[in-house]
Length: 362
Ligand code: GDP
Ligand code: MN
Image (tube, helix red, strand yellow):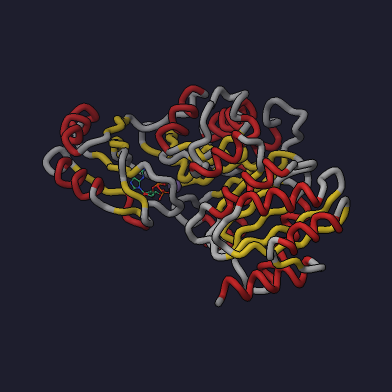
């Protein structure tokens, strides 16, 4: 789950990472007071979850005189389609230098990796292309609680020494908060020291309970409902509903749809041994997304019985066409039930996907 900037900054500050003086406001009326409290020049930052927020118009400068007008402008804007409900009013920084520091998981080495760049700011990808020498990275053994000194010195060589404790603290936050990503871009040098001007923190969804987070805000209503019922379910942007059993088969189905230039609207993994009730629920859930034009059910019967699946599909009785590929335990019974009810059965996953893509594009 992604935290918003102000939430991430709150977390970082508990690790003694310096952050700008700020006030969170939720209405235009609070802007002038917030600005006065901070004293003079401020930046108003829309708290929306989009990359390149500054470039998308989500960050505006203001002074005590125009704080209300500027806040009104920001609250009535849409930043990449998102409405602005919260604005962070922050002291304006006198920036002398911008750095980039990010900690993520490197899956191939199964360890955290720290990325540091001498040129921070908005487009780190461009920096990496233009000045590869300015970007340094280092993996940290997951067995270490702290970043070893030699790694910190390697990453920050030639830079202000005060950056070192910030990276150490960011690493501690990354570990203790079960983060997938902890990032400061830019980490700025000002006349009064180093400050995290921006903050990003993504908590591993699998660790939310341990972190005391009871609700994953990143989930849609249906995704949350599916999770509560023990299904893996994700919404996408296409028009084909996908139901599979097992992550491997479900992902392979999605890959095959993409290969045929189709686009999935969502996918649901019913898991192993789903009975007719669960299958019925799954089909109805997938069908409830308005964009779904056709549903493909691709199941392999092992402990899952094909006749149970067939009964579930029939009981769901959804309005969209359901294209089915079933193989394995009680396949003949399942096939007889579905064909008897007028459903379209295909023998291979390739044929079923091709048929679904064709149906979706008609
Ligand atoms: P982002 O666009 O969502 O990454 O938002 P940032 O908080 O990183 O702001 C974008 C850019 O605004 C930064 O890289 C700075 O170069 C610039 N900026 C200029 N003045 C300020 C300031 O006082 N505070 C902050 N946070 N950014 C500033
Ligand atoms: Mn930023």
